[in-house]
Length: 415
Image 1 (cartoon, rainbow, N blue to C red):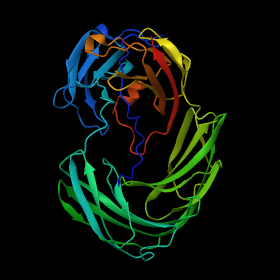
Image 2 (spheres, rainbow, N blue to C red; image 1 turned 30 degrees about the vertical axis):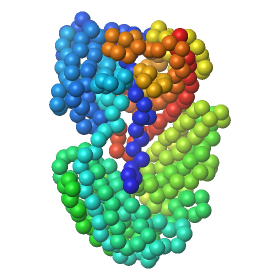
Image 3 (cartoon, one colour; image 1 turned 180 degrees about the vertical axis):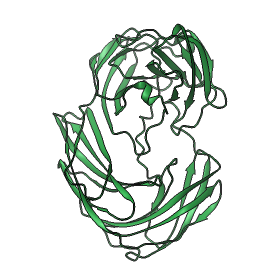
Image 4 (tube, one colour; image 1 turned 90 degrees about the vertical axis):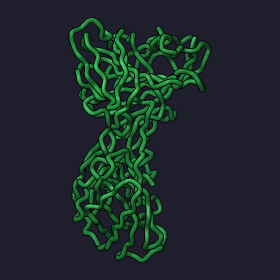
């Protein structure tokens, strides 16, 4: 079981923007800059064999995912083309840094390494527990995902998968806690931890845990949704400096103030997330506070209004490569427009810190926008990021997900 709610981009694919609206200037040609960057997957693993375009220049990433293009003017638009037979492209608009690390949004990532963690737990309430009590064992590390399993017996076993390196080290936590009928956390019964658990591919590691009663304290957070939105979910996660991260509470209540207990002496801090939906169901906004110390009362959180496409209108016809896409921005966010048609249609995504773009003509690269086809459009905003260059520093979302994300939906028919 993969427990980390890593807030990734939608698993759609992407498109190029060689001709932009008012937010784009030079597409990258005719300058004196050398751009030496890297293309990665969703885990930050380098990707070989990706075609990279800047203006009229192109190259292919090497085994380390690296590429270099010379004679580039800044700002520039950079395109990553997925390997054939995929008809997928990703564009990053108006970059200025000369060393970008950029994810190919068509590639979520592979985890070829696998190991098993197993052991027994003692302490806490005997298993199986009564309804409303959960027991979880997890493995985590600062640079990997969190994996784990819920228990109904004292012995446990679960798989951990990761992209590399061949050997990694992490920590195993066991936690037992209680929930009410709304799935809101009400208390903590026991916790145990084993540090320095080393994993190698195809191995089995043992980690027996003794659980003892933790101290508890209270946190409270009040969230304010944007106009015409109602809160529909409130979540609480525990986060540890050792990289372990898992959910302990998730209710479907619409109250703007959430007050819950958290462990006070096991090295955990809380992450609180609120989700809200527009009245017509076409827009969602999520935001979270990270690093909340036990005993923190009166924290506040404002959910940003979602980015929203203003042109073309939902259901528009006659949309083509010259049609300008315009949207309302989210402050301190970068925006990703995903365009998805039918099977075998080219799929596009446009990544921008601005407010407008055009669907590019990529027919020279085998991505011809078909005539009379319906496309779904999802406009995502994530942040906080100062600009698109800040995202391109690592190309990977924070371990606990972004501070906020919004999404809105519409569609159109091509001309």
